[in-house]
Length: 91
Length: 288
Image 1 (cartoon, each protein chain N blue to C red):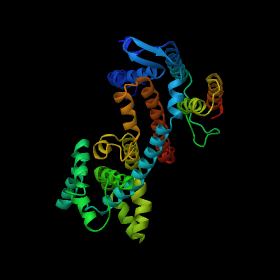
Image 2 (spheres, chains in turn green, orange; image 1 turned 180 degrees about the vertical axis):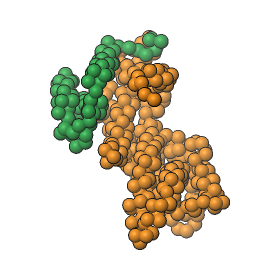
Image 3 (cartoon, rainbow over the protein chains, first blue to last red; image 1 turned 90 degrees about the vertical axis):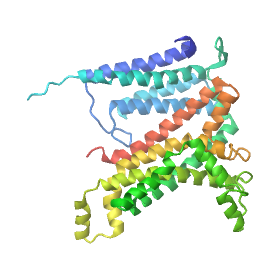
Image 4 (spheres, chains in turn red, brown; image 1 turned 90 degrees about the horizontal axis):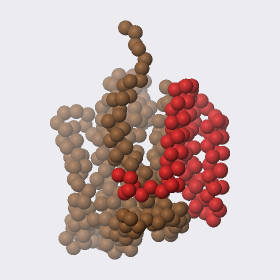
């Protein structure tokens, strides 16, 4: 089952992080249910909406770095993490 | 009776979750794994990091293919959605004529994709095809195998013929769900035909239009069989859309790592556009 999936360490870390984020968000939601609110985004969002928007835009930030620059992806990752934090807090 | 709040019913979702895991999540994870490796065989995979993504994003033929795909999907939506609404508005509201219209509309939807391609391939031929021969007879120089404009026209016409009925049927069902009281109120107010459409029919059609737009966008964005059978992506590469490029890469050249990176970029585009459409159309109703 595992062999044909051709796992590598970086992709395993990637998926483990996503799974951990989802798990934390679920626990957080049960402990403190979120209320839809309006931040700097043009639409009112729930915590889950902001996470989705954050992850999707992070993917595009990485693609932009790959497609347009030769810069290290660690910079893209740092920008994405900061952006995700800003979005979840004030989005 | 007092309702006891509990979340045990979520266990009933478990079978679907397992099914989706096997049909979507595990394959998607596998594609992500493939996209960072150069794969020569089951036991010969080499980690290449993000090289494939860099290569795919900077490849000019892929960019051209993406451009064609965007133009095609935009054209499909701009033609099929208004046309579908128009057909639904013109259809009889009940009786035998309505049934006849529904059956006629459903016929293109029942035909398998490769057969649709074959039908139009023959239909458009200049020597024996009814459509191609007719155009040539009235003096229009039409040859979809040699002229890119003709090829595009034929592929678009084929898609409109094949899928506008879906939009029309969805809109028709939406229109039939509007209570008569709305029309009576409009009549009392002496509302014009346009006002009835703009303020009664269109708002009530919103939920079916969301489905129609999303289905037509996703379907047209991953179109493969029909243009493949009709034009084979030609002439040149003028009607080669994204999924055909992807298939050539993955199956034809067996370049699995590169194809995986490409399909992830493809997936992200579909995800973004679908989310934008969905939010734009459903958001105004969210507070109600």
